[in-house]
Length: 193
Image (tube, rainbow, N blue to C red):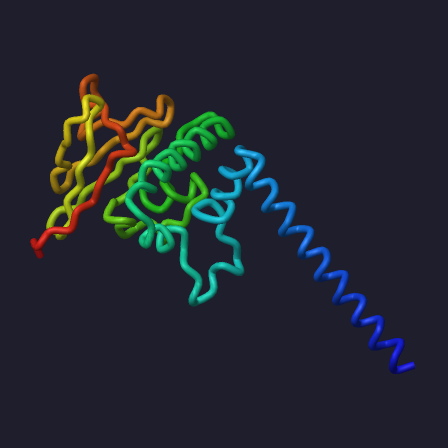
């Protein structure tokens, strides 16, 4: 009788391991052979989803996880914000609110994760736009290239504005001639304190 119980437990463990192996293989195969899945997987495992189990004391928030990533992710994060803003509009027929914590909660993000700079940028969802700001008085400077490849310095207190409907980003003011390539943004630490 003891032997049958041990065999039953052993076979359940074998099934669990087999199912885990199949799941890992399936996800790996999809990741390699389905290009669309790669983008979905990256969103699932990075900035988009933070479950209750991820909110433990030691778990990093999406914003904290981004802090350790290269600034090249700033452009993709801006695109994620614009996608969230458009999704809110499509669902509700109006743009997300532009004040307080609502500017983040309306697009499914936690204000506490984004109220400080993330990767040297201050994120400011504002209706149909997202502002990427450079704060006054810190030791970080932000640079971005215009569409002609010229490097522009984002002065303290200024923003790069990305419009959700067009996915076009602008240096300081939304106006023709101010378009920038958000994927070229760089945050540089200076000696200024």
